[in-house]
Length: 301
Ligand code: SF4
Image: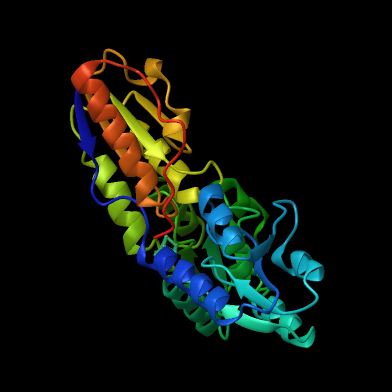
């Protein structure tokens, strides 16, 4: 059995920056109440480690960031790497909160792009419904239309000077299909595909895998880029793929009798978790003993 360490995998620069921002805020403000608006990144282990630093979280997938902000009445609010709308930022200032913004520069770049464009045009923004990044971007202007699938275009009429763009963590393959559908309906539209370099490189590394029997993706089920890596495995012709939170979720049936097993992780997954899975599988490949560790190994950075 061969275990392939897919490179690159794990934390991207945007996530590292957000975690460092949260750590620094906690260190410099030991007497203040600090609350993160949503999960810092979609990974429950990272959230728990930040809680150990004294950072609280408000999170409810059924609520918008704007609604969640109603639950924070004092101290410091940290905006996550997913970016934030002007409305939420203004509401935080109006509530007298101190704002720390950990938005990823790649998301801010997309905000600048669409902000500039809506001055004289409409934007088709391909993204996930109820995802904090798409929520933050779409609420920048009523001229930004969220497209989650090609069928969403049916409800749109005539638009002016159309720009097609997208969320940073989407699947390269799926997004190309939706862009084509947008261009069919709005043939003169400009395209600015904004899938970030980190997401792109992790997906391309999976697409380039050859003769692989199984892909293990270490990541949280709520992490968009982790779930995309699992989907892309099937597009790449890998017959079996599993998304696991940590080594503790591994099952012997997932890997038994396989010749080549590749391991990767989304950009919100601590590398310690991925390395623990790789080390365990390498040991299993060597001695055939299935004895999982008692705890997941979590290092924030
Ligand atoms: S996945 Fe891309 S957009 Fe998201 S935090 Fe990382 S670098 Fe930024």
